[in-house]
Image: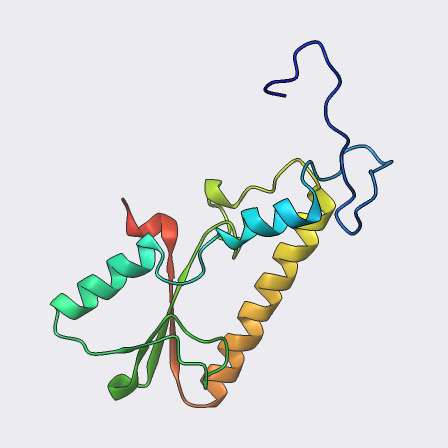
Length: 146
């Protein structure tokens, strides 16, 4: 660890308490620090989402953003066409066959379970929207280019 040459590393904290962790391979951050780090992960107005919105707007489409009254709070809603667009991050939504969808080696069981839940929720949301008469479009981060 940086700044700890020759000395022992700081005491690791368990994710769910303020007590030092006794298990190996645990989180390297305290609960508070992990919360701070995760709060920096954007869910709205990401670069891929802004790119799609800009393209739609330049083509003359008018849309609404993040309608909370629809299942899954779609990223982009085209009410005139009864179409919703989700701009999915390849990692968070586990894009099959994509190199960005690799599981982290640290805490792999946690991440596998979390990402499986995300994928299951995605399927449920798509089914709910289709049952309400909406067309669903999924755009993947890796397919949008840089």
